[in-house]
Amino acid sequence: MDEEWRPVVGYETSYEVSSLGRVRSLDRIIYRENRWKQTGPHRLKGRILKSFLLSGGYPSVALTAMHKAKIHHLVLEAFVGPRPEGLLGLHEDDDKTNTKLSNLYWGTYSKNWDDAIKNKKHSLDRLLKHIVHINRRKRKLTDEQVRTIKQLFAEGHTAYRVEQLTGIHRSTTILIQRGRTYVDIQC
Image (cartoon, rainbow, N blue to C red; front, top):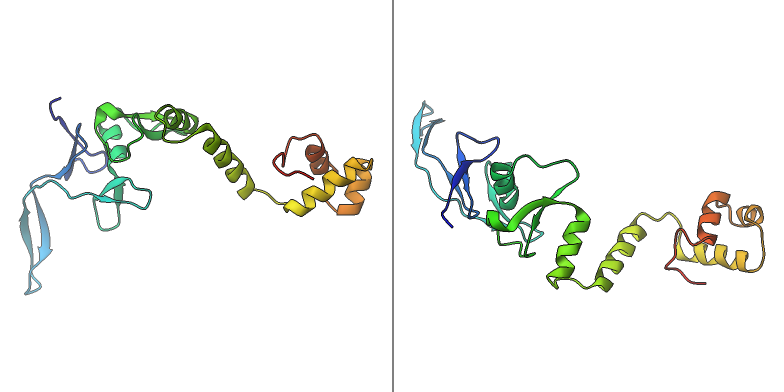
């Protein structure tokens, strides 16, 4: 595959990104102070930028002192188009360091998990644990409160009585009783 270069969206006059996932700066003239505090033109020669890994393990580049960009996002935006709302930049082979255009596409969170399972990066068990973990972070009740609610229903108390005993709203206790929420917590 031949390497094709396109301008980086938002930095068209300064940077280009390639279909092979490389980023380069363009030759340009900037104005800056010299050691005598005089402002004047300074020629910058274009070069391939060094990439580094962000905390999630994604190759990235620094476009400015304050803007670090993931290379796979730059490639997708330049060659495929702007990121549709709610979609992620996905890697077909689940290798975060493979930023070639042929390996990238915009996709959903669930498609990302489908790819991970297909490529044997994660098992179905890990996916289920991940979903439970995400749901657990959003929880308002402790495990002990949920066990108490389930025990009270098992003893034959009504939703109104459970609300009185626990101080937790009836609608929440009914969802727990019917197995709609907190399904992973057993009595």
